[in-house]
Length: 321
Image 1 (tube, rainbow, N blue to C red):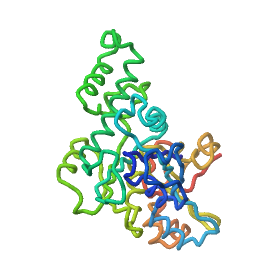
Image 2 (image 1 turned 45 degrees about the vertical axis):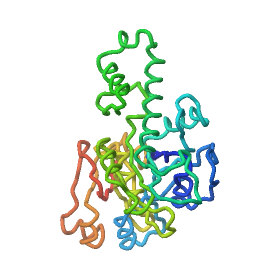
Image 3 (image 1 turned 180 degrees about the horizontal axis):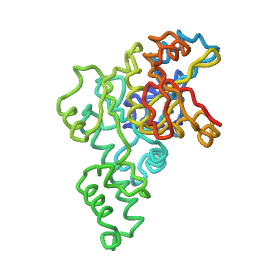
Image 4 (image 1 turned 180 degrees about the vertical axis):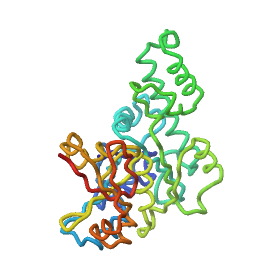
């Protein structure tokens, strides 16, 4: 299972720099708007010390980490919902991703221009979010017709429209499944700068939106992006379970709350159809035992059936017909 995160923000905030740092791929970085028109896509390994420790125990021939797919989406500007700056094209890219990393420029630099001609992170957040809101309003009005939108929407749809018109993001439980809205996608705010560049006003704004934020200085080549990758994985509602042995140690990606047969189906589709049971142990207990055989001797392996909800960090052997 591979879900995707879109990197969005105004031009010249560091999106392509972030993408390059994440994926180690050469992408087009230039100090002018719209240098990136088509999204770059990179598959990034999720840092996981549990996998590293299982590898040391099993010494496998092959190691396969969990991954997150990042899309580098070109910069949005004021009026993007009306097509300004190729806005419609860029907003359509956001429809294709499952969550958003909203990159906000907080650093000051005379060498890198700002499309609004000043550094104001709170304003920049509002510009992007306003464009997402206006695009979603356009989606709702196109679906129901401007003249009788209120008459034809159900109460839940009307509530969404009211929230958007008030400049607020609707909550996920208010949204009907067949409306593909930008404003309900989970957002991580990545604040590009040093801690001293971050204002309390900006933090308050992000908290008001109910989103997560991280601070990183992309101008520092040694900046650690592991927290962002792990947060992206968690924001997508993903967890990892493991299989390990001499041939392969692997982190398998599933949605949180998935039951054992569906998780087994991620390994191989036949495993879900022919699922009998799973032998399960948490990764740290397996390490404590030393290997699978010793864990079995100690009676630490659990036998789980079709109703078992797989937990983050489970190490699993699937038994199937």
